[in-house]
Length: 154
Image 1 (tube, rainbow, N blue to C red):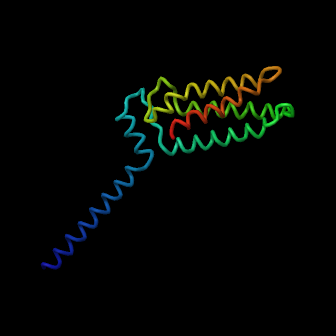
Image 2 (image 1 turned 120 degrees about the vertical axis):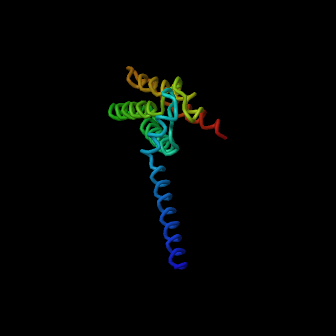
Image 3 (image 1 turned 135 degrees about the horizontal axis):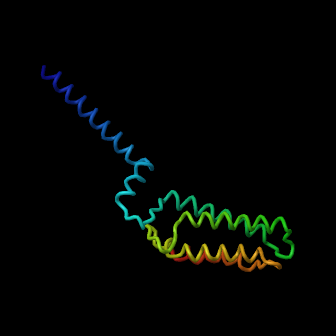
């Protein structure tokens, strides 16, 4: 009888440990955490996950590289290349909007503080490319802004 109760206790402990582990895993899911954040953070706070930052920054790097390759020699840029660059800048502008605004505090102060300036550089570059004749200089300001912000981290 003593062995049976010991076995029963061990099974209960293992079962409760597995149940706790399942609850912990469920709690770590992004959708559950989003729901918790809605209650725990004020409405004017923008939580930006590390995954979102990493993904967005990789996209910015990709788009910036595409811009640099497309507009490498401004004297040789075709109309289609210029339109492609304008489209890339529109995508970057939209992507920057997903990171919030300067007036919206977040868990990443550097991003919150610089996002409006970065977005404005993107808009200025797009408007510059839409001019006749186009202003290619402003596109370089987008890359420069990336570099200036990232130099703060070192």
